[in-house]
Each structure stands twice: as C-alpha cells, then as structure tokens.
Figure 1 (spheres, rainbow, N blue to C red):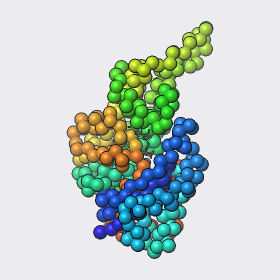
Figure 2: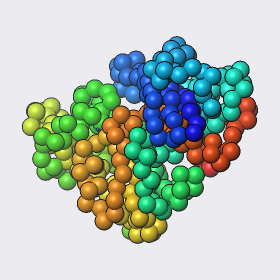
Figure 3: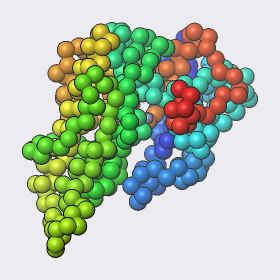
Figure 4: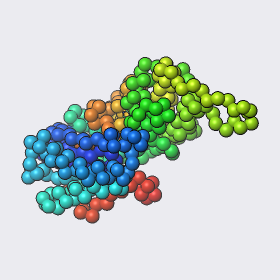
Length: 346
Ligand code: KG4
Ligand code: ZN
C-alpha cells in the first residue's frame, strides 16, 4: 500500500494528484492555462512558468484537501521532470524536492511521456497484454514505443517535424477556430465529409516516424490559395473564406489524413514488435475519429478516460508507484530535462 502525491508542470497545466497503489485516484486537480495562451494561439513559455509559480501551492493544497489526506499520510512525492519547457519543469521539480526534503519522504522523478501511456491503468487497474505498442499523441509529442512492461519502454518512432496536436492547433489557427484546436476540429470533422485528398506522409515503406508539416501546409494552401505564382499576371485572387459546409469538410479531410497516417504506423509497429495490444495516451487520444479507428486494429486497444488524456498529475503519481515498489528513488539533485536535451543525449 502506498499513497503518492504527484506533481505535473511540464507545459501549460499545473496539476497535482493523490493516487493510492498506482491506480486508485483520490484527487486529480488541474489548473489549465488555456485562457492565458489563447490569444497567442499557442503556449508562451515565459507566461507558462509565471502561471505555474502562482498555481503550484494552491493546486497541491487542493489535491491533498480533496483526497482528504494530510502530508503525513503521503509515502512519496512524484514529479514529471522530463521532457518539457525548462521554466515550467523547474517549478514542479522544485516544489517536489522541497516537499520531499522537508517531510523526509522519497522523491520519484518520472518521464511525462511514459506517464501518458500509464494513464490507461488509472482507475481500472488494467494491465494491457505486453509487449504492447504504445502511442503518445499530444501537443508536444507524437511517438511510438515498444512497451515490454511499465518500466521497460523503448522509443521506436517519432515525428520529424510537428506533433499531431500541434498540427491540429496550427490548422485551427488557419481556419480561425481558436486554441486549442483539437477539440473544435474533432467536433466539426464529425459533421463533415472527408472529400479533399490531403497528403499522408508515410516516409517510406518501413518507417515508423511521422511527419505532419506537409499536411498542415496543404490545408493552408487549400484555404488561402497557393502562393508564389508570380509568372501569372494578374496573380489569381485568393479563394473566398470557407463557408460552414467547406469548413466542416476541410476539418473532416484533415482528420481523416491524420488518423489514417497514425493507423498505418500502428499497424507497421504491431508487425515489427509482434505487439499484443495497443496503448494510446496524450491529448489527441481524446479524438473521437482516432478512437473509432482504433477499433479496427486486430489487437485490443487501450485509451484513457477523457479526463486523463490531457496533462494531469494522476498519471505521474501512478507510474511512480511502479518505481516505488522497485525501490527506485531519485536524489535531491534530480534535473529538469528539456525536449532538446533528450533529442541530444537520448
Ligand atoms: O497532452 P496534452 O494536454 O499536452 C501536451 O503534452 O502536449 O495535449 C494537448 C493537445 C493540444 O494540441 C490539443 O489540440 C490536442 O491535445 N487535443 C486534441 C483533442 N483534444 C485535445 N486533438 C484532437 N482531438 C481532440 N479531441
Ligand atoms: Zn502531455
């Protein structure tokens, strides 16, 4: 039996959660910063870190309060310390270290992306058949993994440019649909017809990597016209802004291209790893089109409940339980590790 307090501040959500035995979520508090970043149509790192400073203590207090548990009953403090925006990560890591040191409790650093995979275990306590193919699709990540166990996760493919959630957010900006773009495009797509053939970058027959920047540009050209035709005089006028019907069809066609690409990569990964199941996590795993498409795969698929798709601390507190049981604790010099450091050193 272990009660773990988890802390999350990798990007633009400040979150804290109390989880018992790796699955029993006693509280799950998330302070979203969407309103702060909305007008910039994306996350502004400096604004994010300042908001984390303001939110971290009230969020931790609220998580303890709503779990009806005092600090004395916490067995360990978990924190997502990689990967993320450095200014954001530092707030959660510093709060977790301070709590661990002052209370004399163990500190457990976890990988935020691995924690997204673990989110399928929350509440249900289900363990997918392994080895599994893991897919994390979010605003910052599009990555495929071979998951041998919750503590043995190997990267087998990732995006070479935009993350899929980032493509959703950028396409929403082109279509003037607000931020974040995923939920609104998902809703429009359900009402539209996928009648535009947008490109699907598969990057060669065997590749498990992803590319979404060509698709994003294709949507831009479809909406605003193709630039650079200077030899045509006079230059063709830009197309009229899409009406409601065309907007829904563009959303449906974009979503079909994203989901089709993801599904093909999952099939390839299943063949390559002989995976016995598929685990999907991250903000884009909330996508209804993707959830439907996953049902066509030949193995059981696991997606988290909607509240654990986007960033939260319950998934970190849950994954930390695996390390707690194995006695794998972090020292007080635990580092905040950014995306670029991981790309450089692995
Ligand atoms: O996991 P998350 O909260 O943050 C990161 O770690 O990046 O994911 C946020 C991303 C955003 O890009 C958002 O547009 C996308 O998840 N998203 C969706 C949906 N809900 C959120 N994308 C597609 N369909 C959705 N229903
Ligand atoms: Zn995330």
